[in-house]
Length: 270
Image (cartoon, rainbow, N blue to C red; front, side, top):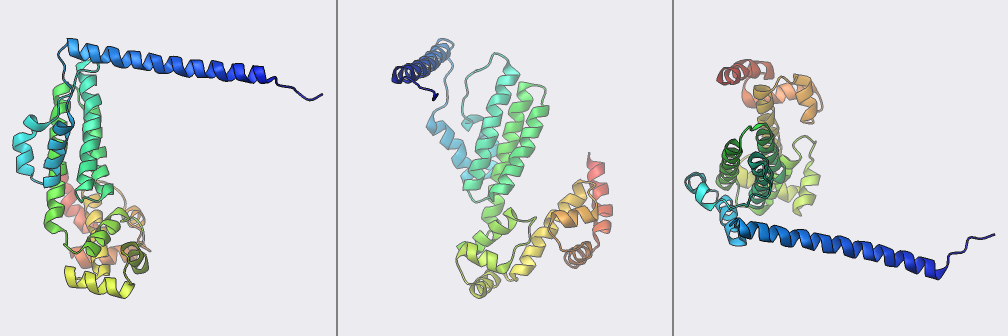
């Protein structure tokens, strides 16, 4: 015998579900209103959109000196949402750093690079032991984002096709990027793109591509203990021998010699 569902039963179920949703919405609105009153009674003013845009525009401008001198004046105000001061500072810092990273990306920094900076400062914040340490770290992060924007404003080529190539290469630095692939991204033929890039940058796309990979390899060699083969694989080289050959051609030393010279310096500074 087939199961039979009464229309009345289905209607009753839908009504109960709707009543539950309405109750949840009413509860949410109640909590929002109570929070508004709490902030009003404790004289806690939240920041405005204009406050937020003031510090974001400072990142857009790419002026590290201005950020250093004016950070405490232009950083948006936040209310004490949580009773624990450190926890409240950490909660607000996570939002602030993420927003700063987004602003840097909008200002021209490759998104992948701004996110790496964001991840670094979020890790630092997680290890802070006081609310003041957290606030100091947010200041350091915003100065770093501004310096990053400034560096790209200084070194980026004005030609939009070249800039898009640079961003794409940096965002895919661990992959093997082909000329046809880049040409499709920027909307030019491979031959035309090669001519435009060489004219603007005074080097071929291949030379620039390898320079960027070797630049990343230098950082890894200096700051980590990753093996040469691991670094070669990570950066998408076809073989470790080709990586070593390219590294020596650009850095004038082998990867191992570069690490020996620079890794020791890093260790001494810690």
